[in-house]
Image 1 (cartoon, helix red, strand yellow):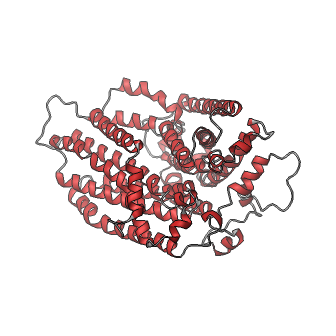
Image 2: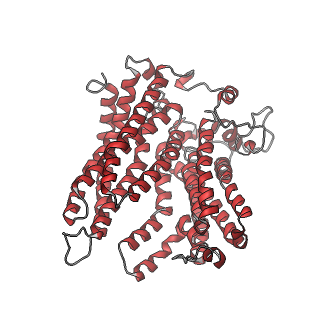
Image 3: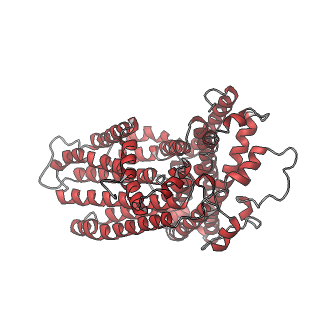
Length: 545
């Protein structure tokens, strides 16, 4: 009943592995990893296989770290919809009423969601085998790396399944999963790189210590998810949980959102107690009062608490200790906005499709512009306010650290970069929501586009520097940074006093061309996306359910 005769596992495997998407994803994954190996292959005319060549070790480390980051990003996308998918398809009540044990359901969902990812990981083994004859890495290190990778995928999948049991929407489950997994990925990569010269200790950690803690945590999280299915909360019509906001606030642990007080009312408006005034945009009124907070405030509370918990140590490190690297704090803010911002707009138009109310919306007297700005302002307002909470430490660090007083222009530029990031994130999410049919697809498409725009350029430049490309090629590719806020943040120049305080001369002392290029490129992306959305709504082409 748990494995061989588990109908949930059999159904999920058939649905996931027999689709064209599964084969396309496997092919793209193999092509990406193969391209990394081909580009990073040592260019030495004669390879020294007797002295652990540094180039070969860099190649294998780059291969594993790249695969680890990709797998970490993909694991929640497979598992975060395990339970919420049943709720969205209105089959959750039937699943609860079936004779299956909750543990069997969770195990089936867990195994099925991670099997495809496990196939991708195992499919990369022939590629890494080609790198072993270069030397520098032993078979035992490869075994330890793959063990740590597989255990990490199981841990991240368990986090996704647990979050899926607490939320009613896949988008909410996915964003909370990413926020929890992000610091774990950073800690794992930092630990692996810190013990590069201690091979034996790294093997013990990867093969003994980490699997013990990670698998124990995975078992506990899956047990908690099964417990929620065994004793489910109140379920109303169509399998939706009945949520009382006042009762939720009374039972909340930690942060409590009070819509009638400042600053909570900026992103969580109080309950409506009067009729809608004349001239009000009904789309905006419906979204802000009914759509965003109809499923409770658990996701918002978790997002705020997790983000602030991570922001406190980062503020101390980069604003008071490592001031010359202060750009890393707004980098964290940008990553937070990139993960959280799209969730409030990726389902704004697809939810109308899923509820089969899009035709009704299109036949109203509202203009396309009214529909778009009513949807957009709500999501942008919430994401901007949540992101602004993380900018207070930057203001605090600027006020308390006199080294920043002469860099006030750089601080203002950092604020402007973050504002543009919120604007671009919301615009791309709304555009993807209008041009796709499902909320999950819209959210994943948004993340892919933002990853290509934000992380693609600096990653390309970093790889070129690691692989010792000639300086002319590197300088010719720096213009790609105009699409990335990370490149723009590190291109903001700091004055000599801050650099000389630490007797360091950074490799990049600032490039205003990249900063202004990023501003112009971001505004161009927003303008192009807006024109595309208005044109599609006016034409009504392909929008009918």
